[in-house]
Image (cartoon, rainbow over all chains, first blue to last red; front, side):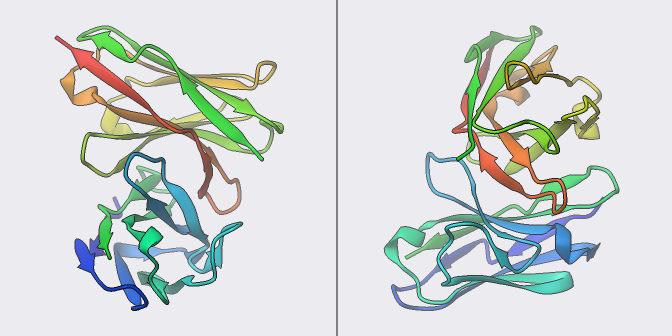
Length: 109
Length: 118
């Protein structure tokens, strides 16, 4: 089973700062199958990034994804107050279980 | 814009069956996977399984084969049944559309809280 480990657990930054959120996989993950989600309190998750680096429809360009193999990063270039949320990475692979999520990074601004 | 909406009893007694339905508005169910994901209170996301538009299913083995899913394309609905529930099954249950080629979840329902009572 491939395990996704996100760090840090909590990130506290100021408006306008740059945030870098890490997602490390215990085994290599195909970049096509790595995604990032944003979940605000009381809401469903929202897809931000798919294929490791492609922004989903309607996602501001301050959100970007990068990485390959076992190390992936979500970057928020200039934090806005509305970016307060928990962020999850997710992978798919042909082992079981097919889909797993990281434990999340909570972003405080 | 695709919208998903979960429905079903919010309160289930222990040892009974949790049954949820997801209604998909706008668009065809073809060529997508239709998934269920749950989130225990204050915890992260757990993938339960999917049903493909052709009826094929695949589940998370952590649920010990308790899960069944079904699909009714004429009503644009898919369903989850989880029998023999315990308190550990209390969670918010989300339905979501899973993209065929990159396996990301691009549309989600708002979620429904399923509470198991003793």
